[in-house]
Image (cartoon, rainbow, N blue to C red; front, side):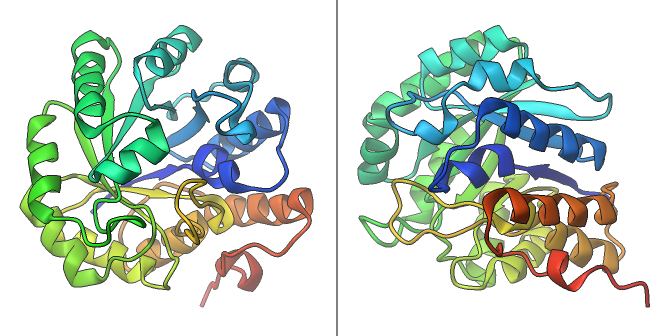
Length: 284
């Protein structure tokens, strides 16, 4: 069995860092990840720089990427204007995010759920690029609490012409919850955070339920500026170690991933959340 791992470190990973990496630094991270044979990388976020200053200069990031055959480069958009900026850069895929709760939609994207749904429909209708629809706070909202699975299922069905990813934005999901929602929506992808140390168990549950696309972030970087106490994504190298150890092919170079996380530790000047980059791969 083979899965697709998408590293979201250059976008979701770095957007919550206190210090802003310049575009050339973010592009270097993308280039290192592509050299590690990541099949997909989320390279940039096309949002207002005053809203998320860590993501300013998205066009400069994309311009400095050294394209590698075999890697698909995507970008994040929250509205039609962001989509138009993304397409103009020549990236390969659109990741359009909309929330499963009204409060989070207004905080994260400054629009109602109805407005976000209309924008998503317009992007899908216009796009010549493949589109991923990521449903954020699919398992729980920091402002409204539990999210009705029926709402998530309805959103997934409404945009079934796109690739659907279910996001545990604040890291509240547990394996049974994840497995049930993946089965119910038939979503091929999940975006998991390890805020409460359930992210890797949730990945295994999603895999068993039929998911084949997994977002992760090098060294476990990440969080959401609009979700209080939402810490990092599952670490890419930890996920690859887990899957490859169980015979699930990823095609990713684990040793190269570990080297990237060690490099990032030096760049950011602190110990990062991932475990495997500190312990090392085990050849036994």
